[in-house]
Image 1 (spheres, helix red, strand yellow):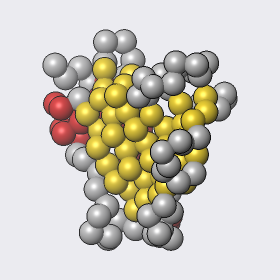
Image 2 (cartoon, one colour):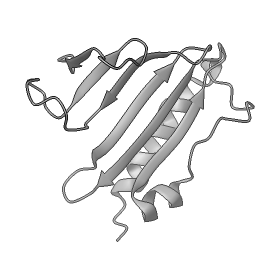
Image 3 (spheres, helix red, strand yellow):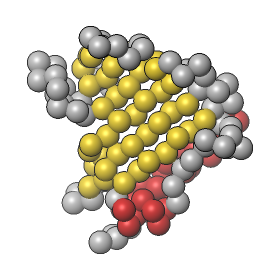
Image 4 (cartoon, helix red, strand yellow):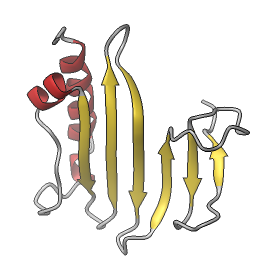
Length: 122
């Protein structure tokens, strides 16, 4: 049920994009960002941000508002303009040996072996 937290979450994301408008290509046919009602009622984020240099950021996350807004079942993937993956952050539970399990990042192109690392600390 809507409680305003997701509208605030949406406002923060929209404001962050607006502050970087000079880097974006909103006219690109693949650019997609949901409206606030979609986020609030579906409790999911799915977006494809296209930058002026042709690179792209794909974002998908389920949202939980029991306390603060928490993202889970997420993937954030940044692709170069040629479509090759630069990095990916996700919480797929397949690297139990990593200290930030299940949260981790993949660096470089997709491969069968992959290079998976803990999330960098702030």
